[in-house]
Image 1 (spheres, helix red, strand yellow):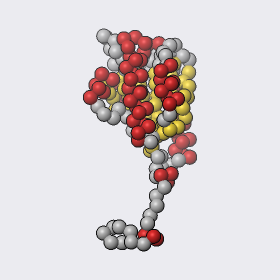
Image 2 (cartoon, rainbow, N blue to C red; image 1 turned 180 degrees about the vertical axis):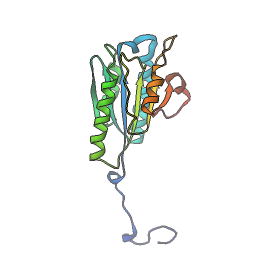
Image 3 (cartoon, rainbow, N blue to C red; image 1 turned 180 degrees about the horizontal axis):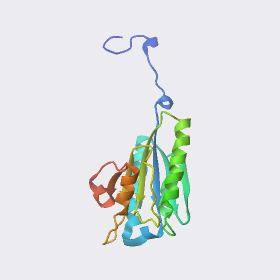
Image 4 (cartoon, one colour; image 1 turned 30 degrees about the vertical axis):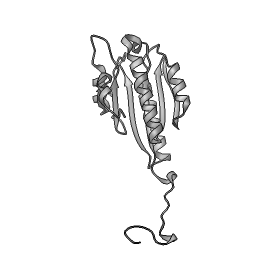
Length: 185
């Protein structure tokens, strides 16, 4: 090699994209009835649109878990971003209880299985919630770097999302402060 440039064919090193360690963003969305108040869910939808666009540009896989009603449901279990996410986002509505604890448990179990299958894959966790849970229990810290975005927009805020972030060992951010940040995840 001359100045780190290959001179012969056998000096070329091909690194296919498929062999590079991938990245996966695990997103948990609290779409309970309490997020309808004061435009919290509409702000969260705007942020999610930006997250989807960043994931598409950076070729990151996205796993999405929606928490509303009586249980948490998987929307996507680790796929590349496509137009289906935008369609889901447009139709996202809020209602019911806050099964956020169920969502966190499902996410932790899924992450353990995913790590066994793809040990080189890097994970990041993004949680969008107002923190209004009926019950509070001690939680295990997140298995990967995590950001909890507090979407509580009421004039009088309870601050439960900050406590939840501390229990999970997650970075806490309020959605109103994210307007100036480039990368929410």
